[in-house]
Image (tube, rainbow, N blue to C red):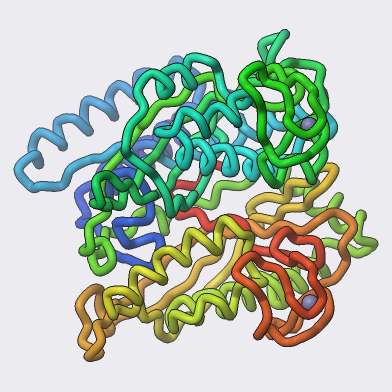
Length: 499
Ligand SMILES: [Zn+2]
Ligand SMILES: [Zn+2]
């Protein structure tokens, strides 16, 4: 691209405006799951300036030729550092929250890598893969200090991981394991193998000598599987099971399935954990229920899938409609209704009322916090909640599932009250504006889009017999896997969304 002098002036102004914006004070906001300090494993606060710099550098790199962009970036970084030095006493710390540029790049990379994987494994489904990782994680945590139990699932791990724990049995026990979220960070095809790196956010209770402590952890796992293999079918991915026969995982020392006898070599038919690292670990403090961290990311540009414009039309064509019509249905009948119903019931601590609207993992992870609020006699009130707008961020489909991710912008008065109704966190004086990415999933081939929010999506019976496992006792169907309707699978904070 040829650059005229007026363009250079234009971009210089953009950069100057950027630097000017850096000196504006940061606006603090909060919200359940997002604003509270329990939402993620990382630190919170600050970061507004760093985010803007990221966006500006991103624009410079993509819009300008190198002989202009490189000197500009150097000048920008020097200027930014001078600004930082001048303000180092202001207490405004820059933390390593991902910038929009990092998010956008990550979304593009993962989309491309997932596409590459589906080309060689037509059965690969991100949803089923994450279910599998979640199952392995929960079993691993429950068994890791009990070598005898850990051995029964050893074909899902590198021998070195099993050995680490086998050599030091302990009276520690881990239970009440809740997986909050799992992100795919990278998919790598090495030729002979496929490797997927994931980041897992979870919390659990560790007990020793009658003393229990609740931990919040982030672990990074590297999973690996032989190349040239198809992923097992959904029945073998939802639960931890023998990849040959589907029976519950139970293997002898050699690795033979107790049910069918097949020798399961790690990585031959199913993913195994080659490596794991604990990235973050801390105890959960009571004040995490009532303290609010500054809201970050609401003003970030929406991170779209690079191919969202074709994804939506392909989706509509598969359902014999056009995208505009479907978007209207999805917006009003699904996303907006679910959003309102889910947050109303969060606010009223009536979490069982929305059991049928969420996947097992998401419902359980929020249910843990509902129980915590109840235990302390607290309630996180969300009042005057309004949806402001919604962006379609991504549609991902595979052989077994369809997933739609929308970014929902909303405002709400967000505060915590105690038993006496006294506000002990947040404020009921002003509404806060926030945005979140919500990912809904549904089994391929399901067409139902007209939901009665108050009844079983399979048999239409009332919800009074909807079990905590997502099984309707009237019809016996498990509704939380998206077999009959859309279910909400993931809520991601805007500053953490990576596709
Ligand atoms: Zn078997
Ligand atoms: Zn039913």
